[in-house]
Length: 202
Image (cartoon, rainbow, N blue to C red):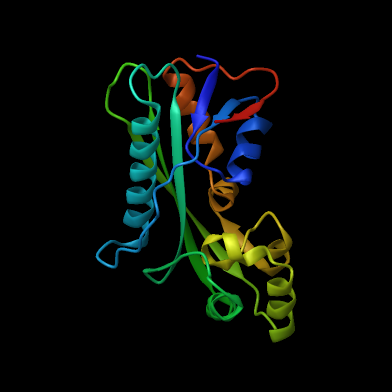
């Protein structure tokens, strides 16, 4: 196996995989990621990853010839899941609530392999600490447009790097894909990365 399907339209996950020589065919999931207050943030990430995978497995149909990888990231503030903000007001509230304190970021992964066996599922969690944020820092970050497609209202690989005081755990989990564990899992099931990752959209 030398290629995988990525059940996500996330440019960050695509770029992370390509950086390690993974050849990717993008097949975005149409699963809507609904809230579920009955689940913990970690469980919610796991549910979303599982359902994204199920959607793309169904879309591709029989005869899967390569791994299919789905992932979901949830920001966890004291047991409350912070999703993608819908507007500037919600983004401001999220970022203000994270100011000067720690929170967790959970990224769940689900991978289906050829042969029809059960999917492999796992979830990694990383602790992130923010500086005390001034109002103008928050306003400037919101004005950049970055918060609106990211769980918790920030992306650590972008301008929000200036908001972060420290990270305890896997940095790539915060970016949206725990790369080390993903690659080890793929290799354990017969996948071999190439020299340079490429991508094709389906």
